[in-house]
Length: 191
Image (tube, rainbow, N blue to C red):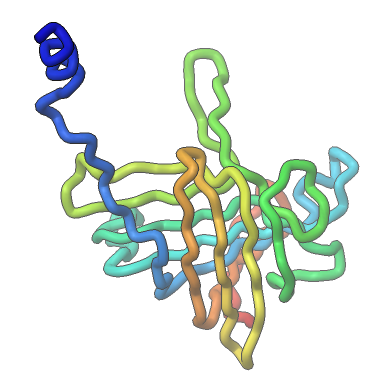
């Protein structure tokens, strides 16, 4: 009898539910931002690109804000050779350090009493806002290839909660070019 009482006390009325985010999204549009040798003052002469990819019905509204539902993948600080200005084909791994063919992982940094996200992350924007969340990218690879003017980006990523994403993108990328840290951007469409 005592065993039955103890056993029933271990159960809860609340089910253990994990929201099923899309683990294999098709990104339908995106853009890249070229920053050049952004960290040359820190003796890293590699060029830096950041990549933003969007799925489903996501769009930029008239107030320059993301609207709709879907996934926003942000790969910050993709390190490429000093001679390249567009995202070259290859396999990029998530890693700190700033070597060629690496992408900075996501992390939360605390400065004074403020919290900042730096590095790469995925932002899930769901119809039910309580399921909208941001998850940091902690490890994995991104493979980039080209076919004419289309750039194909295939992701095999692990997030900070150990979930995985294997999304892909295959479209022409729009590039924004920044000449220096403080300059305004210039647009060109590339491959």
